[in-house]
Image 1 (tube, one colour):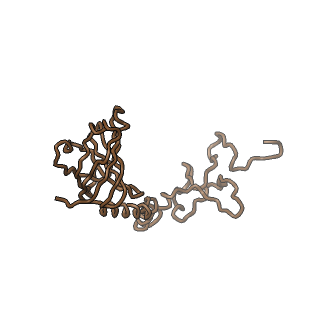
Image 2 (cartoon, rainbow, N blue to C red; image 1 turned 90 degrees about the vertical axis):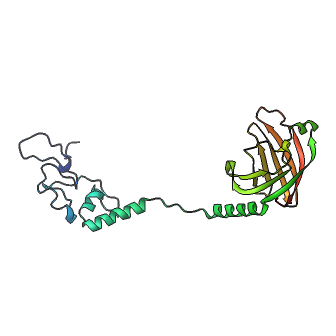
Image 3 (cartoon, rainbow, N blue to C red; image 1 turned 45 degrees about the vertical axis):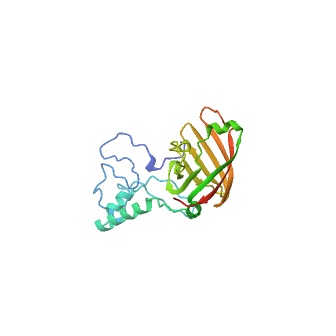
Length: 234
């Protein structure tokens, strides 16, 4: 500090001195020398003892000094019934509230309506193979049922109703679904190979293409032109 300027009493360095010297205190914080500790807390009086000035920053224009008094100490001064009510209100305020997304719910409802409308039994016919050797990888069922039961990948279970043993091979990962644009997707999957069928149209006139897939890349250019129509479930 420069000559002619003195440090405020509350900021002075209190070095060890004769008995009776008291260090400065923060407002609302008790020291070991504070007499009658806690006597004024519940009356809202947190002024410093021994005549010392509170240590605080100058307030901004129009603002109030916020003294370092904990919420817990304030609550401890309340009657027990009000204290528990305050804790309850704090818990309710701090608990996150999940607001349902109406748009998502509406989209899901519309999706399920399409599923219900398209569910049922169908007869499929292969119009052409591209190229011709793709026929050798044919395990596409010619008769099946679209169910409303959830299956692999949150899609829906498609049941194989084909009576031909060639097309009755196990395909546990088989599913169907209706895309957002109305196209129907069927996946006949065996795990290491699958046929992905995309069709569009009405229940009685579905047309599209089946694409072959195999995990080692073989036959990635195999495809077939297919049609399907709704039939009675037997």
